[in-house]
Length: 407
Image 1 (cartoon, rainbow, N blue to C red):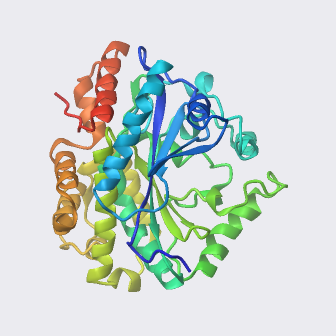
Image 2 (image 1 turned 135 degrees about the horizontal axis):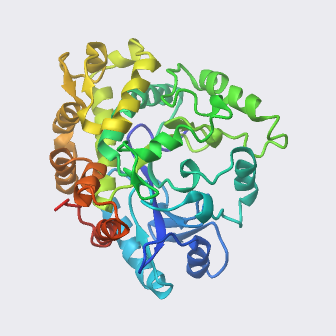
C-alpha cells in the first residue's frame, strides 16, 4: 500500500543541459557540479525541497522534488529557487543551464560523454546493447510527471486513464524542432528518436502507448515479463531487468507506487513545465471524477498511437475525427483539432489551476507550443548566430522564469 492515494501528490523531474555560457556548446560537467554541491562524488544531492541528480550523459543535470508534493503553486517557486541557488557555482565554471527537449546543434556522435561514476554498470550495459550515442539517448531532455496510486484498483484506473491522455501530450509540450543545426520536419524530434532508440528489442517500448490492463499481475505478465525475457541473452547478469527498463510513454513504478509519464519535452521555464504538469493532474482527475466510461469501453492502442505520431509531427494542427475517442475524452463527437481538444480540456479544469498555470497554458494555446515559437523566432534563418540568439533568449527565460515570445 502507498501512503499517497490517487491525485494526492505529484513527483516532478526536469532535465536541463549544461552548456558553455559564451558559446552554448554542451559541457559534460554534471559530475563536477554534483561533486561541488555535495563535497564528494555523488549521483544525487538534496538542495532543500529539490534534489539535483545525474542522468545517462554528463551534460545533463536533473532537478526533482525531494519527495512527492501536493499539486500546489509553491512547487514552481521551489524549482526556481534551486535554479537561482545553482547560479554562482555554474558561473564559477562558465556554465549555464539551457532548457528545451534537445540541443539545436549538438553532434551526439562526437560530443556524448556517459556518466562514469555510481550506477555506471547500468549505463555501461545500456551502451553495450544499444549504443547510447544517438539523439534518442544523449540529446533528449524531458520532464517526467509521477502520479501516485495506493492499491491495485487505483493503479488500473490511473494507468488506463493516463493511457488516453498520452497521444495529446506532444502537441502541448513539443520543444525540440531542431537537431544538428537543421529543422527536422517534426515539432517533437526528441520523441521521434525516443521511440526508436531500443528497436533492437521491440518489447521494451511496445507500441509506446501502453496496453490497457486490469491488474498489476496482468501488467507484469503482459509488459514486464516479455521484455525481461527478450533482453536476457544480451543482459545475462540481469543488470537491466527492472521495471525502469520499460520505455513506453508512461510506465508503472510499483516500487514507488506511481505511474510515470515520460514524454514531455522540457519547457523554457519552470512556470511552463509546472503548468503542463498541473494540467495533466487536473484533467486526469476530472475524467475520473466525471465518468468511468473510458475504463469500461477499452479504446484500442493503434488509433491512440496514430494520433501520438501525428502530434509529434504537426502538434496542435492534428485533426481528430474519432468520435469514440472524443467521447472517452468527454468531449463532443465532432471533428476538431488538437488545439480545440486542449482548449476545451483546459477550460474545463481552469478553476483547479493557479493563475500562473492558467496564463502559461493560455500562452501555449494562443502562440503555439515552444517548438512552433522557436521556429517562428528563427524565421527560417538557421545560421549558428541565429540559433545562438534564440537559445540565449531561452536560457534567459529559464533564469527569469518567463514564457518565451517569438518576437
